[in-house]
Amino acid sequence: MAVFVRGQKRRKAILKRPSAILYSGWGNRFRSCPESLPLTRRTGGAAMSGTLYVIGTPIGNLEDMTLRQLRMLQEVDFIAAEDTRVTRKLLSHYDIHTPMVSYHDHSGQLVTQQLLQRMAAGETCGIVTDAGMPCISDPGEILVRCCKEQGIPVTAVPGPSAAITALAISGQETGRFTFEGFLSVTKKQRMEHLHSLQTERRTMIFYEAPHKLLRTLTDLVACFGGERPVSICRELTKLHEEVWKTTLAEALHRYEQQPPKGEFVLIVAGMPESTDETTRSMEDALQQVQERVAQGERLTDACKAVAAETGYRKQDLYQQAIPERESE
Image (cartoon, rainbow, N blue to C red; front, side, top):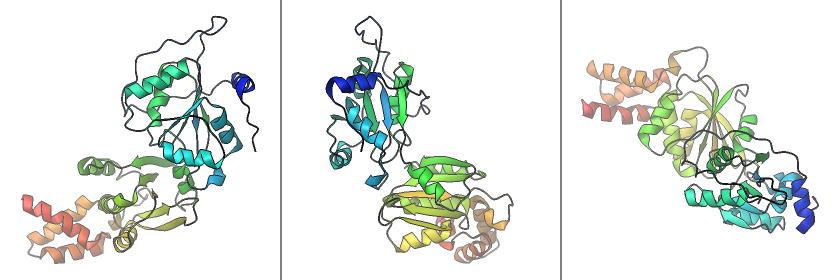
């Protein structure tokens, strides 16, 4: 167990830490950063600031905490938590009583500015998410970017990542991969995103919540075909951990019959090098359906025949073919 220091010894320990490892923020998806803040002058006239520590936490199993994570959670002046209720359970388990502030996806510029001001005045902040590494599909991204823009040191205290953990045990190709995170809740944006990945040859990693899993699997089948390999990873590092290597069509069929539970990571194989009949896009399959209907086949028969040729499920073809016919 780490030895925790308090009071004057704690402050000296903080000042003796190695220089922070700086890194850039990730994109520009969220709000803009507040205006630059003046750094507080300390004794001796040197301008100094605190540090932002990006601290990983377990993705399910509390035993995955490291000694350094425990020490830093104890030593920082305050913790910025995505959900203070979740983080309080973790801190209580390890008898840590560092003050917390809430910092989540709906925190505005005012909250961000308050945190920046505290660090500019010399306080140290540890940012944590509910599970895993902060700033990956996580609101902590904006705080890191603002610290970088304003010259406040940022360093990582690494921990587990659901994406990398799932990839490692998925059985899919791991040499090259792309992290796609959560898909948009908007149908148009979601499909545009997936269509842009139709020729992606790298393994793809998606996050999804249980109540949106069926929608996502349906869209993945529509864009990549039902025979595309996928590993469904759920409840990672927990008692009921499950990693199921299957196809998109089989996964969709299973969860149509069995309500999904737990948080999911989907590891989807990239487009294979060879392009045979089963890797056609949904657009090609629907075109075949339309051609058969134009030749006099019933829609249900056309969908059944094309499903057998392409690997798509008949009901998926039928559901997407109906709106196209109505718009003609």
